[in-house]
Image (cartoon, rainbow, N blue to C red; front, side, top):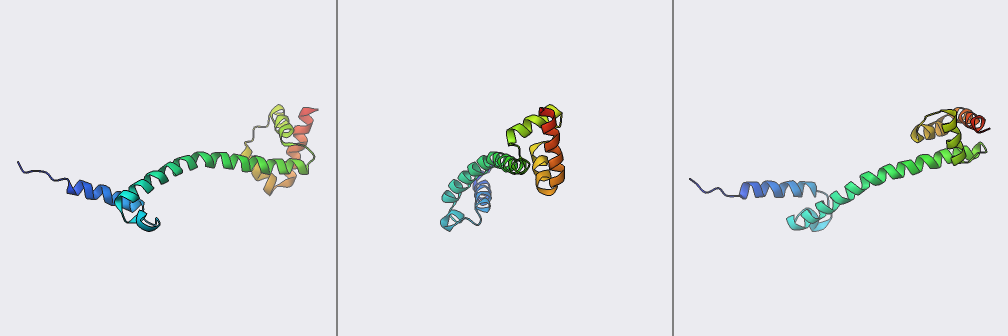
Length: 118
């Protein structure tokens, strides 16, 4: 039986890595060894970034809600406590959108939260 050479698989593997490294600066996009290291590191950054994105958006939503609350004379934690006691189950993303787009509706929510606390 004929001997099988690994050139085809090796070339395929290297082309895959170099394709992922396309656009990287300098030799990182040309040399396999450097490209491999750069692609592995970028994969780690991407993995971490997917977790950080969730944190960052939550922080943004809370900041927006807090700003809307301050305009209505209540702080964020008291507002969220009031909503919970009033039985209003809106997530922070929707609350932040309401605070930005519809100030009157947000004011109504604040009033409901204040009424539930009193």
